[in-house]
Every structure is written in structure tokens, then in C-alpha cells.
Length: 174
Image (cartoon, rainbow, N blue to C red):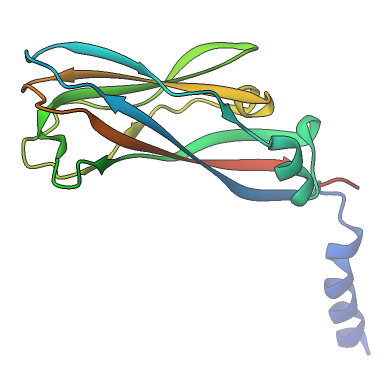
């Protein structure tokens, strides 16, 4: 009898717990930048993406939360992939830095890759800064700025897909 009572209490404990309930999910964004053809190397270039609409309100709602319930948003992944020309590689890059800004927030460096090797291929997975980005994603739009330093000339424009994946930790609506 006592054994059954203990089992029932253990099973009911999570139902009466006072812990706050959290939801965790990912938000993905794609944008493009064009690295223009250059005639010289060691040229620093700063490239701006068009504004990216966050759709954060709808995204938060679909996960049963809202802006004021967000605990944190961290960048999980930022990957650069050459879209065209299809045979191009990032061998022309020496370094890349990625910054994010929004109408209400000042620009922050969120990712980078230094000392890019000549055999890198057409994909770069960037190193990430440990910054809580919730205020940027809560805004309706944000921009990404890509700063590059080349170590080779670039014979033609290179179109690059900028993929960002954000991890969201939030309280659930009651």
C-alpha cells in the first residue's frame, strides 16, 4: 500500500511543480550578398544585405509564446555558400566578419572566419560570437553586413547565400 502511494506521488509531482515551462525552437533566415569582381587583392569590402523581415511575431505565436516571454536568442550557425558562379570557391578570401543591426539596435559582430585557407571550397561555416540577439530578432527587420578581406583578385561577381540559424529559448504562454 505504501509502495503504491509513493508511486502515485512520484507520478503527480511534475503536475504540481512550480517550475516555469519553457519552449525552445530554431529560426532560420537566408539572405544574399554579391561580392563584386576586383582587380586588386587585400581589398576590404563591406557588403550589406537587404532588410530581412523577421516574422518573429508569427514565429513566436506558432511556438505558443510572444516577444515579452523570450529568455534568450543565440546564433547557432552562420554559413556562407557560393551560389554563383557554381565553380567558384572562397579561395579569394583571407577573412570574413558578419555583423547584424536592426532599426532599434546598434550593429554587433556575430560571426567571423579568419585565416581562410586556399582549399576552403565553396562553403564557410563561421565562428560565432556569444551574444544574446533577442532584441535584434524581436524587431520587425534586421540587416546583415558582411566585411571581407581578399587575398586574390576576383575575376567576376560572386553571389553568396548567408544562412543564419537562431536558437530561441522562451517561456510558454499560460
